[in-house]
Length: 76
Image (cartoon, rainbow, N blue to C red; front, side):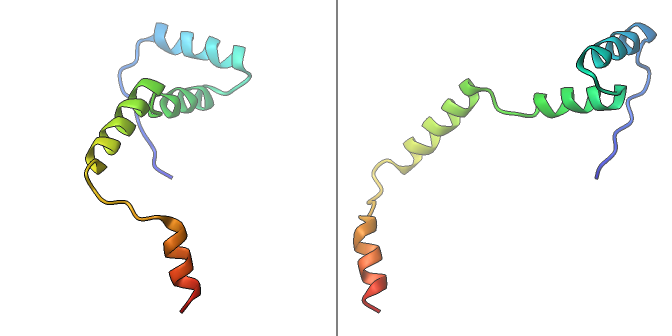
């Protein structure tokens, strides 16, 4: 597991994080970890944009019928 060190946080920031952690029933480390992990997730807007880009990249490519592929595999 990777570790991360954040230097020079203001005491006010640390206190706010501690208060937030207490409200969520977590340790300070658990709260900071939850914040960092949630910030790394894609928003729905980002996910839609990526999906649209992937679909556009596939346009014009011939897509086979999966039933034909399954039948071909079974006939071997």
